[in-house]
Amino acid sequence: MEEKGIFEGLKVLDCASFIAAPAAATVLSDFGADVIKIEPPGAGDPYRNLPNLPGYPHSEHNFAWLLEARNKKSIALDLSRPEGQAVLHKLAAEADVFITNMPPQVRQKLGITYDHLAPTNERLIYASFTGYGEKGEEANKPGFDSNAYWARSGLMDLVRADEHTTPARSVAGMGDHPCAMAFYGAIVTALYKRERTGKGSHVSSNLMANGVWAASVLAQAKLVGAKFLPRRTRENALNAVTNHYQCQDGRWLILSLLNEDRQWPTLAKCLGREDLIGDPRFTHKKDRHANSLELVKIFDAVFATKPLAEWRKILDGNGLVFGVVGILDDIPNDKQMIENEVLVPFENDTMLTISSPIWVDGSKKVQPRKPPGIGEHSDEILRNAGYDEAAIRKLRASGTVA
Image (tube, rainbow, N blue to C red):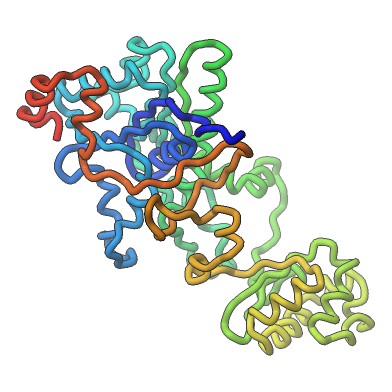
């Protein structure tokens, strides 16, 4: 029998913005948690404005907000006012999880640190996310995935073709979304601890730590004093069978033949170059590696003779390991993504969104619901927290709630 959402009945306060921390709340909501988005009156969460910034795609839909704020309810609450802080404390007293990415000094100023909220609710999981961690001289430094995750970790430098090209720019949310999964893991770990102890706790994560974790294979090599080889361009790859190639139609694919001794003859036949099998330059792995520059040139010429779709049929049909260098145009009609519920429709709509990347057999995810307007559920949330109509009117009249 199919279960209800794993986190049905779990109350989560999302007091965060841009992007990792709110996205962790979104994952909780996918599995049934009741997530309340706390945002300032007026313009609301600044993240709502992301698609209007220079360089972002133009759309009639707020694609960023659709993704990060699905399933949530919104209360517009002015936390700069003592009355707003009092409302938050009242909500936190009945919550299971409080999520924030405000810098430590801002949390202190607003009276919403762990030490402020924990005494009101001993079962509260207080989850804080920062750019650079919560200790040291950079604890209050603003961080985005482009700088704290991508640049600081070394990834921005490591992925460029060689040391003579400029550092590689990141794309929006590229680091934030993996960070969200780590942050989600921290929250779920704390919930498990609470199941065993009955007590809440403070959990945290940050962009810098996740960035170094993403780069950790090479970072660990540096930590143990490994000697690094000069970075090589694609054309100068050390191994032609783990390299990427451009097809006739301009699309790219990447070969990933780790078991090349066994797969080399098959690849040569797929490329229509059986003559390479007995070529003394390429007969054995050591030969292919020693002559990799020549083999890359040969492969470049061969792959340029057919479009990507044809190469996919040929390589897939012979069990060779490769990957398509995807482009965004591929995604809406990617059958594999749709069949595996990577892409799912919003409730009562055909518009697709991207599901969180974990599934649990027997536990249904919530069908995504469109995100809320600013303060759309303020009155409902306040009533559920025990405020009567007169108190709600007073909060609205003072500008504390909108």
